[in-house]
Image (cartoon, rainbow, N blue to C red; front, side, top):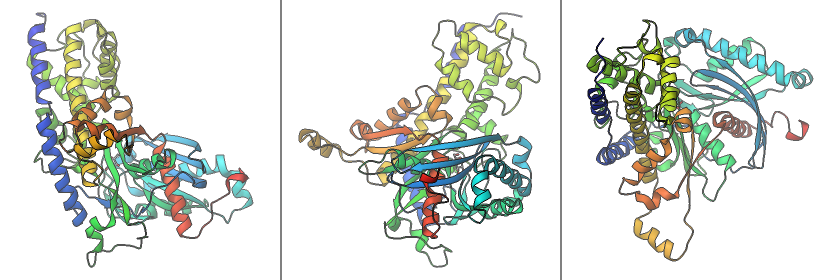
Length: 502
Ligand code: BGC
């Protein structure tokens, strides 16, 4: 077989990478459209970018105390944990984790929820058995982190709107997921009450606010992981859909004048007015379980970046004979839809060596392309694609962050920042809690996101510097526990057992 023409290969890889460029103008257009769709979603029910009122009307300040259970369903694993909030911005957490069997993601709701309840039972038996032997009438309060779009009607009630991230269980749509879980928990006879329903972004926001209380509290909790989404603190007066007659809104505390809104920004611009689109994105969407939905998420998050890369590599193979000297089995990951993990991109992006040795071994181990027959130029071509896909994801992620900073009035005009600098007045930081494998592990993700933030005129570099972004570790567990605490307090239920009893 003729050796591959390296110049043509790199030229083609670069041409493909250009298709993934998301420039400053694109960011600005994106922000404008995001601001428009935020308003549409705050005013009307049933919009694609749903802007879900969460019934959480304040963020913690770090003094909260008690022990709560939390479970987390939202991606590839199901986690059960108990969280001991010690009231000094700290916590300890015990947890167990079980992979969700793939088949269960597309089964029926009884199969899935009875599996979840079983995990809760095993956890409670193992970690809280003694306690409940003594006080069997006292229920542990549980926060249920359920990271899919729900029509939330109370802090512990929410009807599933649609599945995302590869889940597809038709009979659960329209049902109250707290009730589905409670029913299966009751069937097993465990003393646990599902007290709060929490999206992972809301959990992240709460956990970050608990662990890093500042003058102003945390503004935004954002996930860039298997999926992507964000929740932020909004003025009640702007959530006008809650005051429409017959809106079916439940009771909530109006005293703070605020409520956390779960944006469900994964479905930003499903209409494809401003989002970038390549052949490889279109191939992915066509082969997904939800074509035309979660179009923003499909360009950003971990469930999808590997598949975009796989499509782009197959494109290079077809166009210029990439890997023509290598042996690739029919069943190799490269030939199997949805089997390239996003960690592949992180490893390849991180490989700055001359001979791209890590990239080659990742190609062998994770994609099934025999490394012995992969040239450095071929690995370089793949790295060009990886970089383009990852950078676009990070720059796109700046769009909702910028829009939320603008919409909530957090950014200040540059001139007032100059005045403040002259008077040495300390400017408030804008605190953002983040979580997820992409933001945590993709090299340069935050750097590229910040670069794009600076390109938005209302933000610029002065405001961008005020943004403090930090990973809220175990955010969904701690956040769910915090919301369970608030819900239990509202219902007059004391903490399941006081911290000093532990
Ligand atoms: C879901 C969100 C979730 C996000 C991150 C999306 O697919 O729709 O509810 O917050 O993933 O897990």
